[in-house]
Length: 232
Image (cartoon, rainbow, N blue to C red; front, top):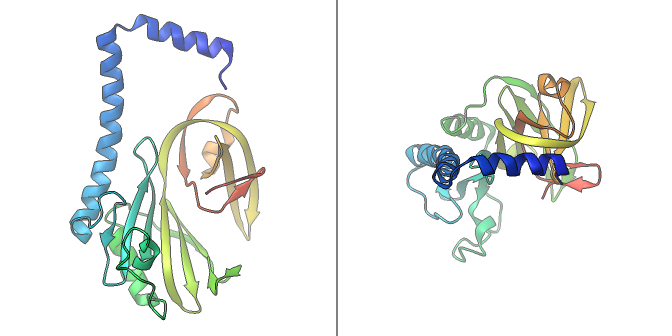
């Protein structure tokens, strides 16, 4: 919630703008959001063909899998997911779950990961992990890249699905922050609104809690929790 001083400051700024000027400012902001989203969707179409579901932004990967990009309210690409078609059986009843899960080999996974790079480049691999907690016969090991976090659903030595969380910039006010180590890596997390994001060390060191800042973030990553908040 904004303080009285911040609210008064916003009111004063708006009062100085004429109606046409205010409309222009809002229009430019909306146009920038639409351009970012449209560029990402155009890249998906260029690599995977036209979307087969414009409402859900689904693109065909092969006979068993689809690619789904998702965006935040500002039009930032927050995650690229490669998922089995049957995940969307509610919207597409013809995509029934098969008797056996469709799976990627590691070679197929690496090839597809390189294709998706045409939408959001990840940069060099920094650290890769295997194993971890298992639910529904699936482990969820993370891979950290220069400009993305990749989480794959791993069944023994094959892949059920994967999510790419690309780095992107947002303007936000940080409510809470924390630093911890995961194996030998330093991890920096922030709570913005009710969502948890990862940030880089440089941004973490210059955090000013309570003030609006421009941050390069990754996320929100599904299922991560911090201070009694969990990402949906």
